[in-house]
Length: 351
Image (cartoon, rainbow, N blue to C red; front, side, top):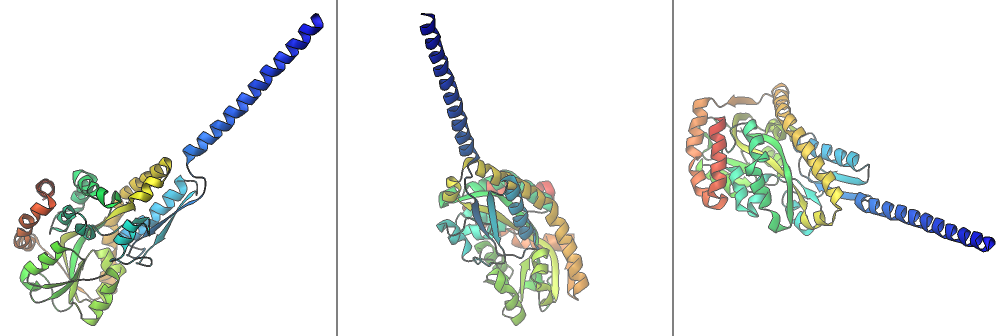
C-alpha cells in the first residue's frame, strides 16, 4: 500500500511540475510575443521624406535632425531617407505624390496648401506675423491646430511646422522702398492666389515658378525679382544675380510637416509615438535655430557680394501695411473669420 501511495505521489508531483514548467514557459513565450507586438518593429521600416530646398537651410537641417532622432529613438529600426533639393519630387509634384502614397512624408511651404484647404491662404496674407515670436506662438497654438486639422479629409495627416523665417524682396533694376517701386516689375512667387493678388495690388506682375527654376529665371532676366527668406536667398545664391534687397519682413515662409494618412494608420502605435516625439523635438530645435541662421547668412551675403540692402523703417512699413490691408477683408470668407481674428490678435499683441 505504501509503495502504491509513493508511486501515486511521485506521478502527481511529476504532473504538477510538468504543468508548472509548461505553463511558465508558455506564459513566457506569450509574454515575449506580446512585447514584440508592442515593440511593433519586426523589420526595418523605411520612410521616404522628400523636400525641395537645400540641406543648409532651416528646413533642410530640420529634416536631417528629424531623421537622426527617429533612428536613435527606434534603435535603428525606423529609417527616414531624406531627399533634398527636389531630387525625388519637385514643388509641383510632391503634394500629389504624397496623397497617392508614392512618398510617405513631405514638408511643403504652407502656400502650397491653399489649393487643398482655403484656410491656409491666411498665412500668405502680408505681415500676417509681425515677428518670430508671433510665428512660434501662432503655429504652436490655435492657428496651427486649425490649419493641420483641415487636411484630415485629404488623406494627409499634419504633424507640425518648421519655420524658415520672414520674407524679404530682391530686385535686379532698382531698390524697392515704397510700394510704388513695385510697378511694372515682374516677380517670381510661389503658387498662391494671395501672393498673386498681393503683387497685383502693388502694380507688378507675378509669375508662379518652381523653387529650383528661380535662379535661372533671375539670371536670364525672365523675372526682375523675387521674395524669399534670407536663408533661401543665400543657399540658392539669388544674391549673386540680384542687385538690390529690401529687408521688409512682409511675409511668412514656413513648412507643414505632412505624412500620408493611410501610411500613418498602417504604422504600429509605438512607431507613431517615435515619429511624433521626433517631430516635437525638431520643431523646438528649429524654432531656436532659424532666426540665428538667417542673421548669420545675411552677414555672409554682405561679405560675399555688393548687393545694396535697405531695411524698411517704421513709417515705410506702415505704408506697405496700409496698401496691402484690403487683402484681409477679401480673404476672410475663404480663411474663416475666426482664423483671421486669431492672426490679427497676434499682430496687435506683438506690434
